[in-house]
Image 1 (tube, one colour):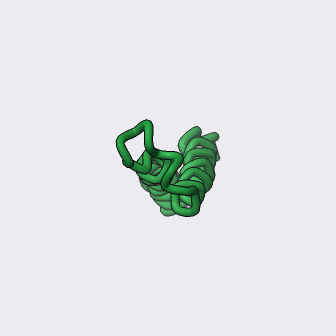
Image 2: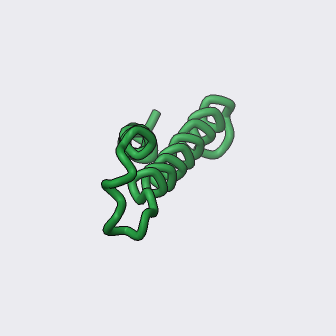
Image 3: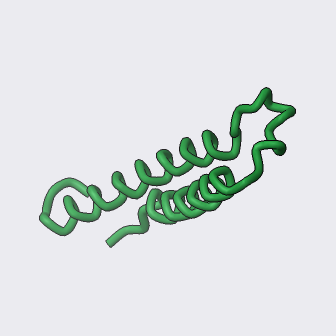
Length: 72
């Protein structure tokens, strides 16, 4: 089995996205006055979370294909 870089990248970005999303959900609205009231922590957390989940999905799909005898 070979090392797939998508797995640690996916884990890292998923964890970071979760942390940032949770912070965005529970932070006070006064914090976002400089960004015209847009909760940037929430939106960027969701974007990073989506990227991390995509990397994890690709890594798991490649692992399944390799174990089934398909292309690595």
